[in-house]
Length: 107
Image (tube, rainbow, N blue to C red):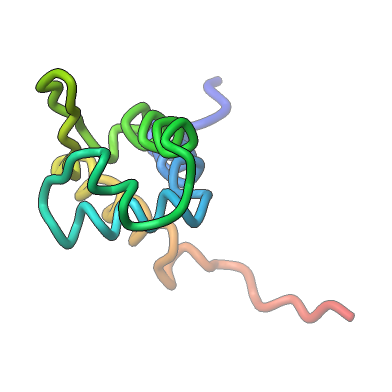
């Protein structure tokens, strides 16, 4: 028996990639602008370029963004296909149907 479904693995990968406020901001920037060079993204908030590069790498590895290399620049944009899949998986996970248990009052 497989311990996790493909959807559970995908959702966890998307959630991990979105698990930092800088990555959320990067996604917002790319969503607003369509595509953007990494240098233009760096202008939006004060983090080191190496840190920005790591955040972009995480988002790209999860498939939420894609990059096009035009040396010496890299242009990034939202991966629309995977973004739709992430939205669908989040919608299913967070829907009322997924909350089958009754509310537990603790404390």
